[in-house]
Image (cartoon, rainbow over all chains, first blue to last red; front, side):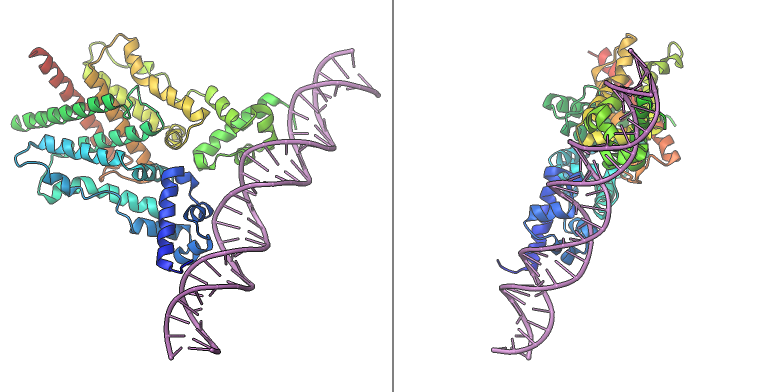
Length: 203
Length: 203
DNA sequence: GGGTTTTGTCACCGGTCGGTGATATACAAT
DNA sequence: ATTGTATATCACCGACCGGTGACAAAACCC
């Protein structure tokens, strides 16, 4: 039984993460976290002050999304804008789908406010399209709006897919459906870009 | 103190609804419902067997969405398809936004399975586009997919708007933003329909 | 070594939860 | 009025919750 406060803090944080991903956010509590971490709950109060403090610490020590900027490096020069946007969306959703933690946090965010969900929300808010702005890529406002709405739609479908709650027969957890949706996204982005250009040229 | 089992059942069901909309689904429990309804909790077990039974009964006695078919009656003959689809989407989302109960149930659906969320999910699943099919209106599969994805995106934005969780600066609870989004939906549907037609004619 | 601080264990508190049995009270049939 | 039944009230159970104080033991400092 070594005594290492730093290690126990990590055990607690790891326990919290396991608990969230396994039982969902509704199961999160001081007792449950302590049990999961194999640690006395009083240590949570000692090291983090409270459950709120623990959530805050968890949010601080974690970056939920990989750097979106890396996506760009895989995109060759001269790729049309609509394809860049499409890839951004699909890449984001791929990451999101492979992260049960992120999915659970979004659900939590929709039902409650706490230090963790607030921080997570901020992270979520900026990551995507700011990366474009950093590269000096300026998109039509409507295009941005569409991208976000589509992105939201896909996230939502991923969340519904977790519990087999298809939306109008559209089940994102089915590979064929997923493929169909991806194709649609690609073509709608293309069509919308084109219609914007046509409009600009006739003004 | 009248003794009217039917009335008590209604009081319990009403209490459940008030509780869901006011405290959210996380606050739902036998004790809380009984307290909210001003009734002893044992009556819940007597009349509904269990919490599950109560949720089932609540789902049975409630239709969450007004008949979507009525939307058609307000649409003149000869309206272009893309505009019909657009109106369907926006009408659905208008209803959804004005129903805190529906919003809370969706959140519940995303986190847990129970008789109520399952029934609600089924209701949600069919209502929208089946109405089109009933009228003999056949839409391109991609168009349906796009409609659903956009619809999902808007629902998601409504949910995020409840707790001020904008998505990439896009806050659906702000009227101007809402207006902007509606315009975008209208024009993207138009553009996508057009691109489908172009594609068909060149095959 | 001794004394202090840090780290961890344990027992306990009041409160709420889901669930149940015993009992009182209103009503309806006779 | 008497009986039986449906309706409602009350008290209670064990389990879990968030939170705290008392205390043991390891580690550190001199």
